[in-house]
Length: 438
Image 1 (tube, rainbow, N blue to C red):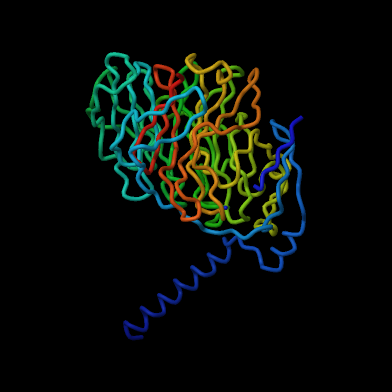
Image 2 (cartoon, rainbow, N blue to C red):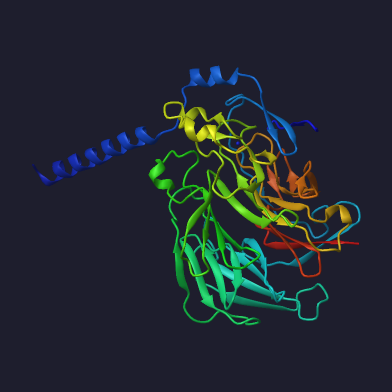
């Protein structure tokens, strides 16, 4: 078995003053109640605990101790791609601009009729729009471009199911009457599932997919906080994947304890649901590794009480919830700490070399909380007979100057185009890249 190491983010004024003091005091008490912090002395003790070995689906992995390094902030500055430069793919592939001029093209969905829909949305100053692209003559290039719908609310996941177009806004799942081939959504959308839009600002994305039978919809919903530090009452129906009927009824929590699941797809060999998950912050540069994993119905994956199975998060020392920790599932494939692994798609087309068949592409948006940049690329995870192997770089070159903190872009969504090429959403640069086999 291979060995993996990740180093691995009275008067009216007086009355008003008293009210203000009471409010501040109440807030302080509430903040203390929910605060998940560790003293400096305890951090030093924990940092000396050495390595912990975890058995993953791709082999044993060594995890450093919490606080073995300082948690830092290192944001990237996005600069324009030079005219003569683009991402770098392996030998045997070409990279080209499929479409550009978007405002944060976060996600791409390819409809059954081969129309391509792009969600333009962001954490701040969101375009709240879906743009439709069409390759009318099947030559692999965009012939038509339409504003499909505007005025959304931090939209992300999209789905065509029966005679409806589904849109996952941050506040809920909506569906609109839809006829195949239409270039603009008409009519009013119906909110069929209410979702919480509160909490941690970067966990606003809601992704959706359907199953093979097309009788269920799965919704990924990230946590409202880093590690439950706003109180677990804020985390109801958060940090999980929900399953509902196409009309929004029959909701169940399909899997829980997933801090921020985003990309979802079905393993084409085993039929298992897989997801890409962002793990927690502020335990150091090399904790906790993001991952992709198969998702078991009813499964519990640890957040916020533990990570990678039964490794207790020290910030929950006073309330360890050991019963949940003991039953936590170890995720399958670690993808590196603070890589912001978001995009996920299995490659089922036939134009890439056979080694890519049924493997998974993972879009990594890139770190903001690590001393050295991590992510900022597309990874490929080979699968053999439905079983994952060691991840490898696929599309790189997004980091312009590590020392200066400059990057050209930040990949997110990955989707297989109708012609078998790979479409990569370069979020901050406003570009969708096309990677094709020569």
